[in-house]
Length: 119
Image 1 (cartoon, helix red, strand yellow):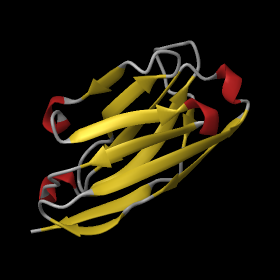
Image 2 (cartoon, one colour; image 1 turned 90 degrees about the horizontal axis):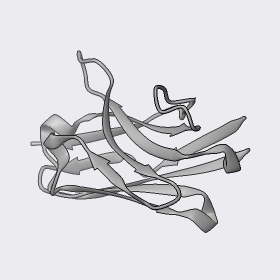
Image 3 (tube, helix red, strand yellow; image 1 turned 180 degrees about the horizontal axis):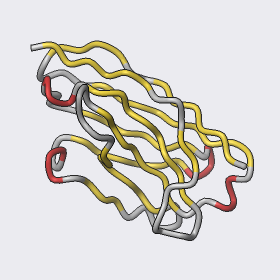
């Protein structure tokens, strides 16, 4: 099993920045990728960004490209999401996710951290 612990959410004004962190513990050698989902009020949960663990190849949903940066620190088993130029529509609960070799699903989920962007 793998446990994920998120931190870094909060309240920020539009145009501001936040950095989310997610530390993985447990059987982390199983992991092939990590990422972030979000659930905005009244909307379905959706992926925001992801990164492969071995080569750091990133993926971003179109709405955050150029504003968010995902990175990882393999030595610390930690993934980060740097969020710049935040918009009110980025308000959501952000969930850290981690996956094993089966790319059809995400195997582990964090409890979520609230990000609120005021206009």
